[in-house]
Image (tube, rainbow, N blue to C red; front, side, top):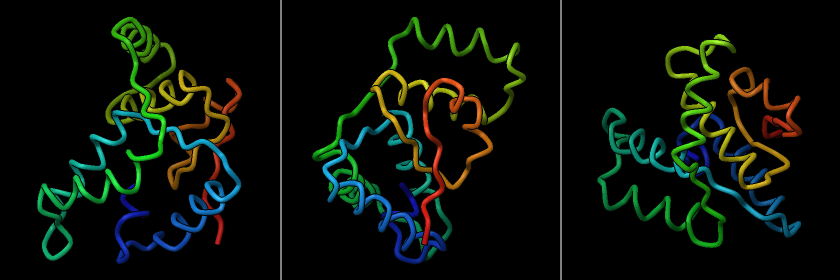
Length: 136
């Protein structure tokens, strides 16, 4: 999300192109609610001059990822499952947030997850989610 909304980001062109292609192809955009919150956090804490004011971060996320998207969150019971499975799956640290995002994708019946961090989502391939790095 950050790459898609920040023109200065090294992956901006790839992110916007991939999202645009899919939307033009009438694919439904599913947005994991925790990813939206994480993107807001990043956008409002970046070092100057890249940091966005809270109102600006909200505006770019609403325009790019809230309007027209299917926002998916997990119920409390699913958080218990994700957390309970984390030690078994060897998930520690910040990877737990990626597990929650992946679980939201499955809950929303997404077929593809666009990410520049494929390694943290590999386990979702076995669960039917195509994990894709946006191409040039």
